[in-house]
Amino acid sequence: DITHVRRLERVRQDFVANVSHELKTPLAAIKATVETLLDGAIDDPEHNVKFLGRVHENAERLHFLVQDLLTLSRIESGEERLATGPLLIAPVIESCVSRQEHRALAKQLRLVQIAPAEPLAALADEEALSQILDNLVDNAIKYTPAEGEITLRWYADGSWVVLQVADTGVGIPEKDLGRVFERFYRVDKARSRELGGTGLGLSIVKHLVQALGGSIQATSQLGVGSTFTVKLPLAEASLPVEV
Ligand SMILES: Nc1ncnc2c1ncn2[C@@H]1O[C@H](COP(=O)(O)OP(=O)(O)O)[C@@H](O)[C@H]1O
Ligand SMILES: [Mg+2]
Image: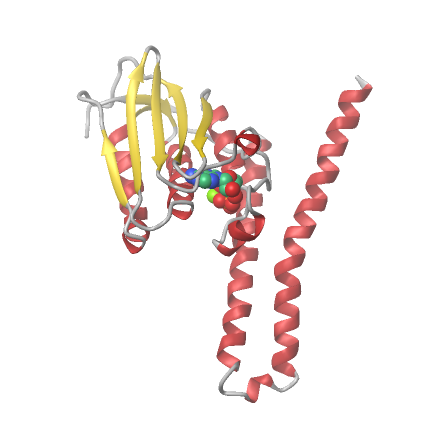
C-alpha cells in the first residue's frame, strides 16, 4: 500500500543522503590537504610527508566504504552467488583466527576458541561465513580495550549451529542494541571512523546470515562486553568425506 511505498522511498532517500555524507568527509579532507601541498607545503620537509599520510588515510577510507557499499548492493540485489552446502565449522574459524591473530596480539587480546566435542557442520557458504566471522571478530577487536578477551564458541542446538563471538569490550548501550544492524548506524560515529569503520559491517553480516537462512542477535552489557550470536541451519548428514 501507499504508506509502505512511502516508507521505502524514505529509506532510500536516507540511504543516499548517508552515502553522500560519508563520501563527502574524506573527499573534503583529501581536497584540502592536496591544496595545502600545492600551496607550498610540498617544499616543507617537516610536514609534507604527514600531509601525504593524511591523503592516503582518507583515500583508504573511501576505498573501504566503496567496497562495503558494493558488497551490500550485491547481497541485497540477490546477485551474490552462494554455494551453500555442508560446511565444517572448525576450519573456517581457524582461518578467520589466523587472519585476525596479529591484530589481536598487537592489542594484547586473547583469542579463545571453544569447540564442540564432535566436528560440526552447517549448511552454509564458506566465503559468506568467513565474511560474517571476519566482521564480527574485527568489531570485537576494535571495541575491546587492550588485554581483553575474545571468545569464539560454536555448538549444535537442535537443528541449528550456534556460533558466538563474545568480547570483554566497551559494550553497547541498551537503546542502541536493536539498531546496530542498520546501515551506517554507529553508537559513536567519531570513534568508529577513527578506528577505520564504515558503519556497514553489521548490516552486511545480517544480510549474509539471512541469505543463509539463519538469524543473528546481539546482547551486551555496557563496560562488560558484547556477544553476537549467529544461528545457521545444521547439516545433519552428508559431511564432506575428504578433509
Ligand atoms: N563488539 C562490539 N562492541 C561494542 N560495540 C560494537 C561491537 N560491534 C559493533 N558495535 C557497534 O555497532 C556499530 C556498527 O558496527 P559495524 O556495522 O560493524 O560498523 P563499524 O565497525 O564500521 O563502526 C559500531 O560502530 C559500534 O558502535
Ligand atoms: Mg565493523
